[in-house]
Image 1 (spheres, rainbow, N blue to C red):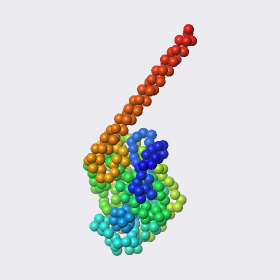
Image 2 (spheres, rainbow, N blue to C red; image 1 turned 60 degrees about the vertical axis):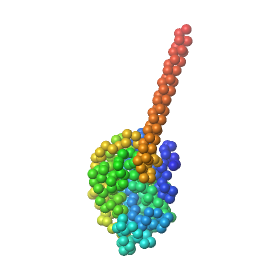
Image 3 (cartoon, helix red, strand yellow; image 1 turned 90 degrees about the vertical axis):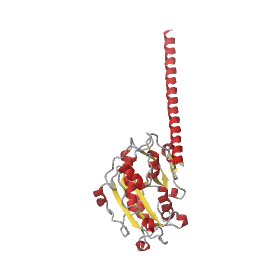
Image 4 (cartoon, one colour; image 1 turned 90 degrees about the horizontal axis):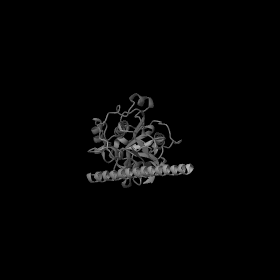
Length: 321
């Protein structure tokens, strides 16, 4: 963990991922940075040939959905990627070796991705996974590091009490809709963007982003085309504006908000029943400590006021004597 603006904790991503994204968080606490709805977001998803770049896995598809905090869709980008290694995992992502023939290499995407990430918070559902691959393949090719990040998986676990937190199950539980295009990079990025839109729209109070400020980059390049998407997508800002939202207007969620938000640092891993219970106990302890501190401050203020009144009374009596 590192300390961000105003002494606010900033979550470190997984070691490799942390070279690209510095994980922030969402909180309902007042005065903890600015409203999350005021920011822009670049929601990213990748399909890969395996789970770990250190074991030779590579990106074979990537998508980014650029949006505002109010849910306005600004732009979409997606392309298959030539991983330069055998394309494994077809049973999950449906990408075959022939599909990536003629697709760009990951390093060729640095310019367009830099432009998409410029001035935005980078978002993913389990963002550490995307961060690992961005760090392994794109950071050495020139992608800027230290980008502000937000993991919607950790945000959901921190703010809402759900039976399951996977992207499709969370979407269905909260909005009644199953995501379309699952296990395609663009389909999953759209679903994550829709989830973030609804998270910010349905919050019982202002959700605030704590983390590094977005950074504007001058080195981003416009989308020159030549990519190889496997899914029809809105390639221009005007086409994206016709839809307006990543998938649909935000749904109204059922009330599943936690009375006490959990520390996102307690919400990683499998988030088992034992982990949930421990995180809830920690939240209760932190709330009790804050209440005690507030009561102590109020008592100190009252005592100071009483002392001031007594001092004034003594001075008045001395003046009358």
